[in-house]
Length: 125
Image 1: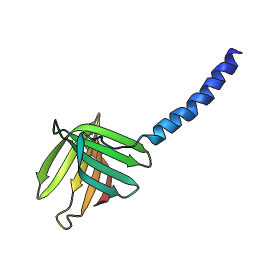
Image 2 (image 1 turned 90 degrees about the vertical axis):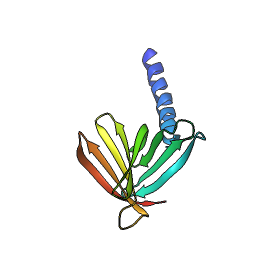
Image 3 (image 1 turned 45 degrees about the horizontal axis):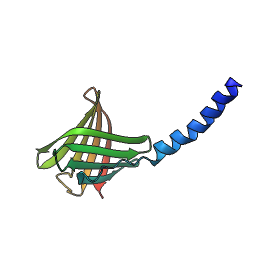
Image 4 (image 1 turned 120 degrees about the vertical axis):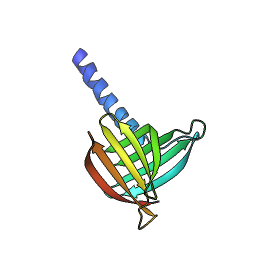
């Protein structure tokens, strides 16, 4: 009987957790304004937000592997192009706002322990 209850609870909890995780959107609330929105190769959609009160930069991404939300980003103009940087443990996410050749394009770069793992071309949306 206890085993049946455990199995029933598992089958009930599994769809709820899947629905909850699938329904969560990678977006900021009304306390932040969008700074940059890009669509990148491989289904990566990146949004950079700035908190109205604190000025904190927020990273919100959706991709085939799931959603990622990060805070405490930095922004710096480098060689005429702005780059937004965010850290999550040993990973760093760099979002380039434009290129020298095309201000409507950009790049997403992911680093692990200061070594590049992934680079995707992006376009502003």
